[in-house]
Length: 611
Image 1 (tube, rainbow, N blue to C red):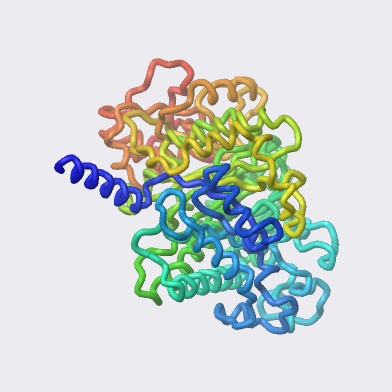
Image 2 (cartoon, rainbow, N blue to C red; image 1 turned 135 degrees about the horizontal axis):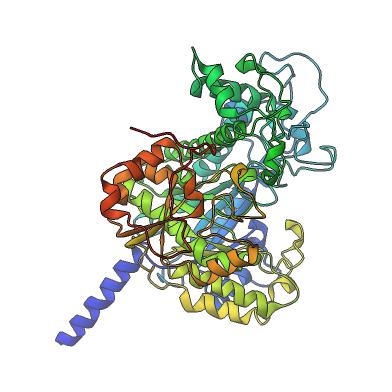
């Protein structure tokens, strides 16, 4: 009889442990109309992904074009996040089926839910680029329309991230400085979160024993990421951006010597136009949008650093605004922390970070709950590094806030050919993140082999691809529901400097904008090094050192990357000049690491002695 009680106790403990959100989840990204399509049987999609692919949840891809009224006649959405004109029926019908479907791990009704809100899927009827008449803020008129051209991201030539007239193209996204744009962003996300919470309460959902519903907002339409520009062009030149940039410069270069300090830091090149007032600054004139490898062409090389920092500040501001929206909804209900916020930023290390709007992503996670990445198969050499980087950032914020953070990657871009090859890369990706402590994995575009529009992908023939991706499917099933792996801190780390790319010479010393951990002469050397050697390290970023120097104390080894040659004064002081330096930052003898840290400022100037 004792044995029976012991078995029961163990079973009860396992059930309790699993209910506390520490199992590894598998989420399939799909559209509400796929969930509700019954032409191939009741819940055919949910049955397929749970039985054949090990899914524990669904990430619903919610486009504004599906929930927002087609022809808004006023600015109601900007003023009222609870406008009654939203169409919630597709979302509700999908949630009905998802939350009634048995969970394969918990054994109770309801799969886990993420809601990806694509804030960039705008409709042509919402925009008028040819109106006339003055506006106090921008010189344009908003009457009867939600947005004008300056509310969108603009490159220095005034383009708005699309090539065709608005009547033919809705793939554009709003900027991060326009009051209209950021108010719209927040109100839309709040409206979706508010409706979801009401739905859950109305359906008596088991808040205590289920994972929070996670919201993943994106400001782009096509790539579903939080970024400045999806076309690898430098954005941030709208009228709102320019005015905000002036204010930013006045803040960091205050009078009485602000202009002199600006000119000294910006390092004007021969032929650069003279700046007599901060208001003379016109970022569209300085060639900062060109590839940073040709920085010698910049009229003000050091000014690009301020421009990048300015854009990062605005991006973080929008993410913090999203956090406010979720918290405001939660404050209205007697349910603690059942809504969570994740950020989807694609990759955190590739060669296009400057165009996305960040170099060091650490600060972006300050007020969110999870980091979702989406490395493409072409980045397979970097999966281990990416997993270590994501783990390190989330560990940092767990130490600072006491909250639990999630992180994960995403498989995407399936192709018609080479199924075994791409399945192997996806398996490597899952392994890299799972064994570093990721909380879940997301599968995007599965079955959508031609990347067709949403209304064309719900045919069952596109979802019968299990045999093509058998290796990948079996890997998902083998990890689904397992306990989340430990993701704590290690005893060795590498300082990954967010080195601003104007100070690199790609031909002689190749490294990415955030820098790689060695002296390398070619991309192949970098790939080989990251693939074979760079794992089981914590990544220490400039933000961590600048804001929390005591966070470094437990590390026995900290090595410097090549980019560590360039540091801001505050990073240099916190890492190098303190007594902590001799006790816990020994230089390693490995010649692959750059030995000298902080000999130059972040602007590439020789560092003067700091007392």
